[in-house]
Image (cartoon, rainbow, N blue to C red; front, top):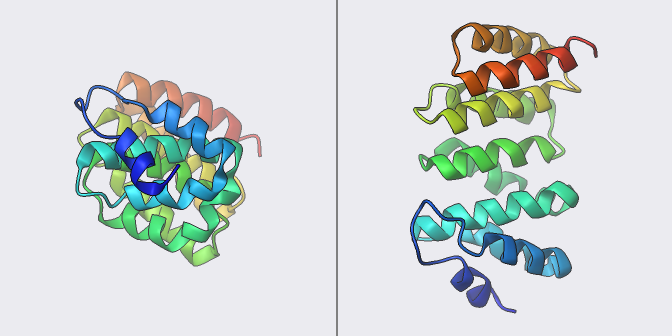
Length: 174
């Protein structure tokens, strides 16, 4: 399978469908050498390809997060600049899987906080999870995350409240 073939599988249809992202994730899981092609798809001119490449990359990286590491700079840059909500929610899940310096973790936490201002409830809920994931091993971020989660429990959407409750329970026990 080549880059063009992988990315071609991700096109077509509409935004309400993940298309063949699961199929592509399975292919890339079996051939991790294709993972850079998914990352390249995050910059596609086609918003459907970008969305589905992010979905597939996020799914592959759940089991093999080390595949993200060579793309750290690209993922952090994309997280800062993308306005596409589907990319934002997948990046919020992937970035905490990276090995980050203290400065990079602080920057990622700031971006997660910015995502909390998004109009999409999914982006906001994903950002809460991402912030909590970043906070797991960083006391400074943990204190901030706990405050943000408490606020989300009061003012968030039902999904944000439920996720915040779960995340707070975990973070306050660390």
